[in-house]
Structure formats: structure tokens, C-alpha cells
Amino acid sequence: MTTPRYKRFLLAVLAWAIALIIFFPILWMALTGFKTEAAAIADPSFVFSPTLESYVAVHARADYLKFALNSVVVAFGSTLLALLIAIPSAYSMAFLPTPRTKGTLLWMLSTKMLPPVGVLMPIYLLFRDTGLLDTLTGLIIVYTLMNLPIVVWMLYTFFKDLPRDILEAGRMDGASTLQEVRHLLLPLTLPGIASTGLLAVILSWNESFWSLNLTSSDAAPLTAYIASFSSPEGLFWAKLSAASTMAIAPILVFGWLTQKQMVRGLTFGAVK
Amino acid sequence: MPGSCPGSPLPTFAVNLMNKTRAYGRTVGGLRSLSLQAPAVTLLLLWMLVPLGMTLWFSFQRYNLLMPGMTGFAGLENYEYLLTDPALWSAMGVTLLLVGWVLFITVVGGTLLAVLFQQDFLGRGVARVLAISPFFVMPTVSALVWKNMMMHPANGVLAWLANLFGLPAVDWFSSLPLTSIVIIVAWQWLPFALLILLTAIQSLDDDQVEAARMDGAGPIAVFFFITLPHLKRAISVVIMIEMIFLLTIFAEIFVTTSGGPGLATTNLAYLIYIQALLDFDVGTASAGGVIAIILANIVAIFLVRLVAKNLES
Image (spheres, one colour):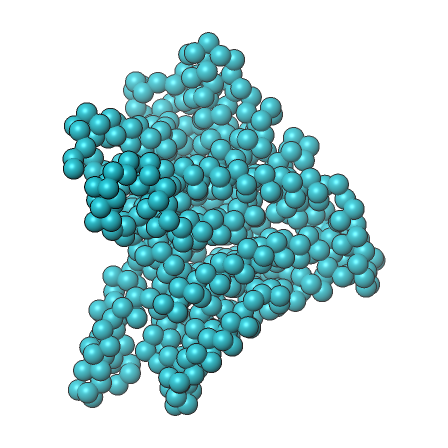
């Protein structure tokens, strides 16, 4: 049974129209970044002479690079740290399961359920008293712990998919645990580890509760920098658009690349 | 998000699971896996217990950073103050409306879009990527793009569109503040629902649909009797995960309305933020935190149960 051609054509038009409407604000922002400030607040138009002046202006403010660098350091630092802590844990859960394994996994998941605002006060005071407020170290610690359960879960599901015979064969050939992990497990599950890492980077990059509340200037990442455009004197739409476009472009690409595996991580394996 | 609640359901089914898997356990493997898991478990345990314990402790204390002289045990004073404050109930209402509307829009919209984007059409892959993109945009950017370039009463795209049709421009954030927030948040989370449901719908058995069609079922019957039941679990996962995140929406309110006008867009998270970092009232803010934790855990119980069930199969 085939659908008539005109119906399929209408369906395609409808789907594309919806996709474009959903994407429109992002497209509009990207376009506005190439306008002059005057053109940015003029009547909406797709026709304009593109200029890089907003990009130049944003870069001329030396602090943009500082905020971008903060985002990179915090997102990648916390992701690396989370992977380092999670890999041994996921390895033992997948290959040396004990009666406690499932309980531990579920408990880890439950630590993600607590609203951050519920512990805002203690974390803020602890950070103030230990001098971690407005430091990159502080944010890296928070993001590492925030993402640790998801990272363990995702790695666990990827490790479990690996046929056990392969590791057994390695062990037969006299490989030690460390060799087994380095020469068999890590290379074979590299795509899974990579997509786990990318998801952790995306989540840290976009995190906007702790970054707004625990940083002020020195360690502020891009989320907090963009928020500073909300003040009345910051109503420069073209510059806001240029800065925002640069802030989201890399993450958008990461998201597109990992959308399939991301479902696994975001739903804790409940939807595959 | 750190921490878990003492009232969480874990102990009971953790014990159940232990009993079920006991047969496979070995002491040697147990010791080895214990040492491998130690770093992750210890860190998460600290991350959960320390702040949670402190929040609970503070919530029973007289503790305001601006009034250093005022200290001591407060009993239930903070809770009493909060529960009799109309602002709390207004914030609960805002939280409920925000969560309810966004859930409705994203789940219904996400399901319909998943069916649409499952059809075979030209450039489907690209269209899908465009439609899920907003989920990867940082909340502060989404909120400001909507506030300035879409919803601005004079220069926004929506005002321009309204003008085109001869309608008066809407001053979104002053006349429809909560609706504006709902639109922004729904725009971010509709792609999430779509992404999850699209993945789930791909495992739908084509033969089953084909058989139903042969028996004379129209597309609507197929949707209600085959597609929807197939998506049931994915939909409940979407609802629960969204609920946990939507309960404490913060950045979108922070950069657009700052909770106003009045308390019109102050949800529970924003109210606690005002008490914590603007009024420096540690005691009351912590009592509010405890309330938020309890609310989130009511949802979390069901989500953890569902995931546990899935883990067994």
C-alpha cells in the first residue's frame, strides 16, 4: 500500500515548515550577528549587506575570549575528570557484577534527581568558606559530580554490549587487567566513550544554574557572559547575536553528531 | 544535580535486587569491584549527603548572613514563615502552571512530530536535525534571543508579524509574562521530547502496522491503537525527566523577567534564589530547598522504579 504522491508531497511540506519554524530563532540569531546594530533593530529582513563588525567588536572586548576559554576549560576538564573516575567503576559493574551492582547503579541515578536549588545554600557557603567561589576549580568539581552518574550509566551500557569472549580471549593470552583495559576495552568501546564524553561536554557547556550562582567574573563561563546582556545597557542585539552564535555553534555540532547515543544517556537506557 | 532524599525508595528495591542477583556474587570479584567503584561511589556519597544534611540542618536554624547576631535553633519557624507566606503559594502555583503547560505542549507536540518525522520525505535527516537543535542551545541564549529578537514589543519578529496582519503588537513580558516563559521553555524541551520519541518510534514493527492497515485500520486508528501504546514507556520517561528539570527552571526566568512583574513568574527555584542570594536568609532558603527536594522526589520515585524494571529485563 503506497501513499498517493500528492499526500506525500504535502507531508514533506508540512514537516519542513515545522522544522524551519522551530529552527527559525536560531537562524535569525545567526543572521542578526552579521547585521549592523541599526539593521538589527530595523524591520525584520533577510536582505541586508552582511558585515563582520559585531564579531570584530565582540572579539575586541578581550573578555569574550576569557569567558570562552573558561567554558572550554570547565566543560572539558570536568568531562575528563568524570571519565577517569567513571571508567573503572563502569568496568567493574559490567564485567565483575556483584549482588550490589544494580542497587549501586540505581542509587547513582537517584543522585541526579535532587534539584540543585535544594542544595544551593550549603554549596554556596561551602564554596565561600573554602575560597572556591568564582573559581574554575569549583565549577569543575560541581560539573564532574553533576555528570558522574550519567557518565557511569552510559559507559556501563556500552561496556555491557561488548562480547565477553573478547575480553576472555585476552585474559587467556595472559593479559593483565590493565592491559585488558588499555588494549582491548578502551579501543573497542572508543565510539561509546567518545559519545559519552560529548554528552558530558554538552551538559556542562550549557549548565546555567551553578554557573550563574557560583561565578561572578573571574571564572564566569559563556552562559554567565551571555546573561550579562540581559541588563538594559546591554541591548546590543547584533553583538548579543554574534556572541551567542559563537557560544552555541560548537555545541550544536556536537549535538548533531551524537543525537542517537545521547538518547541512551539522557534516559538512562530506558529508551534505546 | 546532586543528592538524594532520605525518603527515597532505593533501600527497598536495592535489597530486592540484591537478593535476586546474589547467586552470581563472588567474594573475590566483590572486593575487586569494590575498590574499582570506590572513587565514584565515595564522591557521589559525599556530594549527596553533605549538602543534603546541611540543607536540613540550616532549615531548622535561625541563620541570616545579614544579621550575624541572630542565631540558634529555630524549630519549625522557617517552615512556618514560609508556609504562611503567600509568596510560597504563588510560587507553587507558578511552578505547577509552568510544568503543566510545558509538559502538555512538549509531550503532545513531540508525539505528533515524531510520527510526522518518521515518514519518508525528501531531506528528512536535515529537517530532523533542525527540529532538535533548540535542545542544544544554552538556556541563557534561548531566553535572550526570544526576549529581544522574537518577543520585543517594538522590534521583535512577532510584533512585525502582528503588524503585517494589522494586529496590535503584544508586549509579551508585561502582559503575558508566564505565557512567554512557557513558550521559551517549551521551545527548548519540545526537541527533547521529539528526540526521545523519534528514537522510540523507530523500533515500531512495520509488519504490525501493515497488518493493521490490511485489516482496514485508518491512520488515526493505527496511531491510537498501535503507535501510542508502543510509545507508552518512552512517553512516561519523557514526562518524568522533564518534570524533574522543569520543577526548577531558573536561567530562563533569571535573564528575562527576574520573577516579575510582581511574583507573576517567580517559581519555587527563583523564590529560593531570592531568599538565598538576594536576602541571604539561609534558614528560610533551606526550608524552601527541603520543600523542592520533597517535590522532586515524589517524581523521582516513579522514574527510578521504571528504570529499575527496565534494568531487570
